[in-house]
Length: 138
Image (cartoon, rainbow, N blue to C red; front, side, top):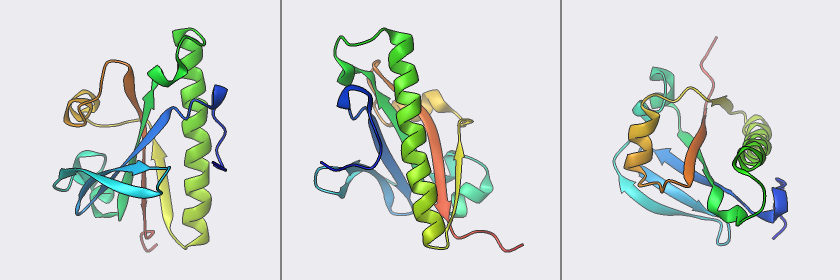
């Protein structure tokens, strides 16, 4: 499909949830659209106060089932972390090209509760969040 981030065994294992003021959305790469998941603004629950004020926060979710029987659990986790890193770098590059700031982080408040809110399966895991918005004035 011409994606710009590599994926081990072309598993396309990372789902991107986008938290915005209008609600939570799941990015559908095939149609390049955001599909509504939840109403309400979750940005304030995804990090420090600055995250609540930013335009969006992207939630990186690994779906290990997409690997099938390839690789053991540790290998799949390493592959998923690498894939999320590649995607995060693409987001950084885009944000910078548009005069936006971005902040990629692994420290996610109430990660388990967020997984329940997203109704994730046991073979899915939240890896990172990345907040994107206008940089604070210095």
